[in-house]
Every structure is written in C-alpha cells, then in structure tokens.
Amino acid sequence: MQRLSLLVVVVGLTSCGSKPAPAPMGPALPAPTAGPTPTPPPTPTPTAPDPAPVASVPHAPELYPPAWTKVGVGQTVHFGTSAIDQDLDETGVDVTKLPDSATFDRITQTITWTPTKADMPAATFELTITQPSAAPVVKTWKIEVTAKAQLAPATVLAPQPTVTEELLLIHDPARLAEVNKQWPLQRLLEVGAKTFQLQFKPEKRALVTHDLDGVTAYKQFLTGLSKTHDNARLDPASRQFDKDAFGDPATWKIVAVRPRIDKAWTELRIVYKAMNAGEPVYAMFRLRPVVEYVPALPRPEEERTANNQIFLGMVAKRLLENGAPSAKLGADPKAHGKAVAGLMTDVMTFDDTQGPKGKPYLHGFEIGIALEARMGGGSARDGGGAYVSGDGWGWSAMKPFQSTTDGGKGQVYQNVAIPGFWTKTIPSEDKSTWVPACAPRFNPADASHDPGYEALCRKTMGFVDLPAMRGTKPYQGTIDANNRYPEYKKQWMVDDHFALEDGRRDLGEENGMTCSQCHIRNFGMHDYHDAANTDPTKGVPKAPNHAIPTLNFVITPTNSWEPFTLEFLQHQECRGKANLEQYLGADAAKGLTCALAK
Image 1 (tube, rainbow, N blue to C red):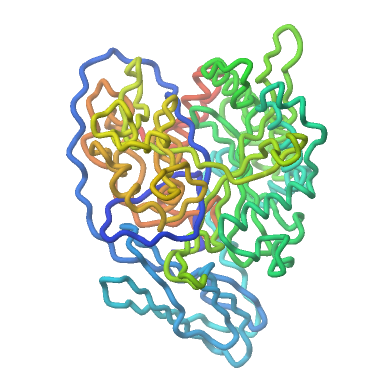
Image 2: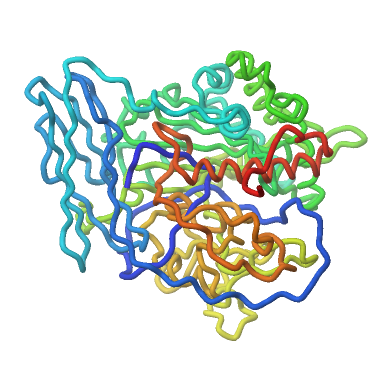
C-alpha cells in the first residue's frame, strides 16, 4: 500500500496471518533500545499469568487511491500502487491499464505520469491485485487532467497543536530552512562518522589515519542503499545509476526534525528525503550527546542518565519557555528554525570528555542511520529478477564502522544487523515496568529452545534479531520488509501469547516490533487507563490495543495525518512530560499535558 499521507516516529505493526510469503530481496529501520520508562517503582505484588492469545482475524488486501485527484498537462507526478495485507499473505499488484503518457515501475510499485492534452478530461488507471488462494481484485482510479498544473496534495496538510508542530515533529519547510542551510547531508555524514570513532576501542581508534570525507561517505551511503533494495538505480558504480534522482547529495533535504524526548534514551532524529526521486526515499539520523558504548567505561545507567539530562536540557534551552513550546518562537518561523538548527549543533558539537569532571562518553554521537524507501526492497522476484509480489518498501540501518580492507585506517558506512524486537515480556527486576525477554525458541536455558537460534537473542537487552539464514544456520538480518520473515512475525514473535496488539509492547522502541510491522498496523496505542500496560504489579492488560484504520506511514506527514500518528504524538507528549519532570524537575514540563491519561 502507499498512501501518500503518513509519518513515523518509528513504531507500528500488524498481526495474524495465513499463507507464508515468498522470500524476497528486500530491507529495514532503526535500532531499538531497551530500558525502563521513567516511572517510580510501585509496591510489588504477585503478577497474573499472561492472557490467552488474541484471535487472529483474516484481512483482505487493502489498496489506497493516489492523493492526486487533478493533474495539469505537462505536470509530472508520481504515486504508489502497492497493496497491504495485514496477514502478510503473498500479494501481487500489477497495473493493467494506464494512459500512454504514464509508466509503471513494478519493482518500486510507482507510476510516473506526465499528462498530455490527449489525456483530457480524465485518465483511467486500472490495478489488479492477486493472491494465490483468492480471486483477483480489480481497482480503478480516474484522475482529472486540467490545462494548468495543480498544487501538490501536501499543501493541504492540516496544522496540528503547537506541541506537535514546534517540539515533537518539526516539518514546516520555513522552520527547517536554517537547519538545511547549516546541516546538508554530506556534512552530517562526515561529522557523524567522526563522532562514531569514539565507539571504537582505543587501540583500534589509534589505527585511524584519516577521517571519512562527505563525498566518499555519500557514495558509501548509496552503495549500502542499493544493496538493501537490489536496485542499480541507487548504485553510483552502476551504469544504471539514476544521477538525476541521486547524483547530487544537495538534493536531499531535511523534511523533519524530531526531538524524541519520550524515549528511555532520549535523542534527536533528523530526517532527510531524496527530493528528486519519484519514489519516497528517507534517511533518518539518530543523534545523542552521549556515546552509546565506550569500551573503557561501560556503565549503561550512568550514561543513560547523563544522556537524558544533557539532551533534555538542550531541548528546554532551545525550544521551551516555562515548560512549554516557546510562544515567541512559534510566532516567528525563522527564529524557531535557528533554534532548531542550534539544537542540532548543540548535540553534534557537545564535548565534555576532558577536564576534572569529564567522562569519555560525554560527546556528541551519531548512533546510526535508519533507512526507509519504496525502491524495491520489499519486492519478491523470480529467478530472472522480475517482480512477483510485495509492496516495494524496505528498511535497513547503517553505521560508519572501521574499515577492514586497509588495516583499519578509515571508516565505511555499511548496512548493519537490525537490532531485535520483543518476543516475550517479563516484569523488570524492581517490578517497576515491563522489559523484553527472549522467547523459549531463542533461549538456550529453555527446554524447548531451538539449537542455533540463541545467536539471535541479545541477552543483555532481552530482544531477538531478525532471523536471516545461511543454509540452516540463522544469523542477524540486515534487511526488513513486509514479505520477509513471515514465520517469525506470525509465530515466533508472539510466543507465550505475547500478541502484537498487546499494549505492553508500547514500552519498546518500534513498539517492540519489526521495522515493517512498526510502519503498517491496524490498531493504536495502549489504554492509558489500564495500569497493567506499564505496571506489572497490576497484573496484565485486560484487552488488546484498540482498532484503527490500517496505515502505511513514513517518517514525516505528506498530505494528511494518520489517526495512529496523531495518537502516537499524544503518547510522545505523555512520556516526554514524564522524562522532563524526572530529569529536569517538576516545572520543566508544566506546559505539557497527557491527553491519553484523561
């Protein structure tokens, strides 16, 4: 499915299923972080057993019309055609009728259309959806063709409350102009790689003789993206490289700045989009003022506390006034944009590693890049490379690791294993919250453990990585898509009755789900009035998360707001308020609210 609306804060999911999907050539997104939410420990009481699993309900494939309803002669537009099946059933989409002035890329599921006068007054597009065990479904769209070019649907995006637009999800181009000016993509790739060196062990770091330059970093970035999607249009070394869409890094623009004040490890997320590409292609940088892991001093809780105090302090200084978004900045987009750019610079240039109170982990840090695109990564293909099924969407993640081919003298941006997701949940040691644990299949201490699959369990964090396979041996996958890992998503992830709709998943990044599931879901946030969703001493949640319309959301809203997006932003405000109060004091968030708790 592709519905030109959307957003994401990285979160989402789906459940149930029937037939297994084919093994595709496809992709993945951001790394999850386990850790307790900022709530005071309650008095421990015995916990009840898990509830019975939520019954799965079959879903028909869903297809959404393009946002464009009118297009002008000579005006080039792009829209997607991919279908969503909540059950992860194998689904194919083909365009069986379109005007001569339009083309269809099956791999990326994208129609590109430049209407001519011959298309007036309207053009018809016919799509056929197929599944192995169901009759084909035909959908028809008509789009009006006018003499003059039409405004893009994004121009009608409804404004949201101040806390959304000026604090949680800053996407107004006028408020991002200064950020784009100061932080073009090449600069962040270059500076980010330099900060990442602090994660190397000191003896390894000493081998680095040259820093990664932005030009080289951008080529590495595209090379990794092309591998994720198996698409030569993204590969700068290929004759098929799409120079118009991806040749110039300056055509990538920041389309969203997202201060994630709600997370267990707070951080700044910067979203770039390839503006010249017909398909949606995004890169989301995750930035913190504290290095994720310093081999010389691994103290997670100490580092997490420092990270949250520093980052939330930066946010408060730059964007808040009396515990709420600054009214002065809200009325002046240019001034607000400078404050947002200042926040980004604060994070990336922070350095308190030296001096009597300095710590080696107190330094601006690029934790990694989450990548999301509809470039074919979620398409299954036959032996000849032709599209068979899928929706074209793929997710992956990159980090600038130390190079290995030159003795460690440099760095290379490369695709990395996608950190895992919740397969089971248990009370935290102090009974203050729910934390992830590896389900029996992945736990060597369990009698039903499946030998070899313990390699996917991140024991210190309790979650399980995506199960790519080399023959019969599992290893950590580097790509996610809706038609990948169907058995894992429909069975293994829900072991021990831990349904995808279980509200306790909301405590985890990506809501405890895989990247693709996080972005396609048909239910919302947990019930804030059921304390068991966050407090193990209250038993277990009494009902699954409530139903919402299916969505397929990307990093930032385009022409409409998804119901889930708006609800999730309320969830962010609730948790952000709690974090600000915990780390900066009771008055730090007095202007924020928690509507979901009312």
